Amino acid sequence: MRISVVCPVYNTPPNLLRAATQSVIDVAGSHLHELILVDDVSTDVETIEAVKQIALGDRRIVVVRSPRNVGQSSARNLGIHTATGDWIGFLDHDDLWLPGRTELAVAVIEEFPDAKWIAGNFAKLYGDGSRESALTISAVRPGSRLSDCLVRFEKPDLTRRLLRNGWFHLGASLIWKELLESIGGFYDGFYFQEDYIFFARISVVADLFFIEQDFYLWRRDIDSLWTSPARLTEVYAAGWRRTRDDALLRPFRRDLRWTLYGTYKGLALNNLLNGFRGRGFYFAFRALMLDPRELGEFLLFLRLMMRRDNRKLPEAESRYSSAERFIVRPR
Image 1 (cartoon, one colour):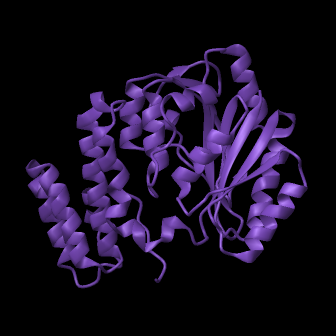
Image 2 (image 1 turned 60 degrees about the vertical axis):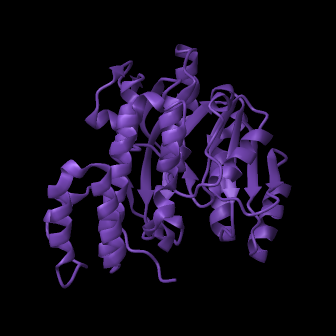
């Protein structure tokens, strides 16, 4: 199992980047064919120097420099194009691979040679060192159980489920490179939701072999795109709008409309939580235009909007949108 791991890098704190890359080296072991660091035109001198030093420490580390800042999805495509391994894994520049995942993946391949997409669960890692495992897809949606900890999910039901909820972290997946190339990789030029869209697209052509164990640690208490003000704008929904022209997802147009509807409602609620009432109203209205039958939902949003203090919304907010709540960092 020759694994090429793709890791976009942009102004990453050196200590986090070193920890992230070392976790892949330790966990993948002899199966690591290469770790591709795609420097997306970092401007931080310490990050640039850290990338150089990390590459000097292991001959399997390959550094690719993007000609311009292109964002995570395009940087990943550049790394995939560079990769020469049989399997592709992913790493965000400040996260961690967890022990045991490689051996479990190898065991799956040996028993099920048709497995081309293997994923595990992920856990959230907080600044105080605490961890919280995410809810697994198998906990809420039964698939075909192959063993005590291995479940197979099949298309097209899997695609519909993924369009309603992303379920995975990209870093917890290993994907056969030829399969990944067959769908054209990631959408270029998008900054949000590109991994969830990628999962939906790959599920159209491959079943998922899901191992019920944490494969990946996702750091949550640091500045990132997840706390960026851009998450409250049209940019956040741009990828889902692009799916309407995707031939792979054409059979799922109704599901895509509901996904975009839910995305707009999440944008409306989170803008309200962050004090942007006007923009919140705009996205609530966009959702209503997608499905005018949901007038009651729109009226519920208006009642929430009329409150004086939206920092602590009542329980009714959960009836309007189940999207993750977040507060953006100051500009």
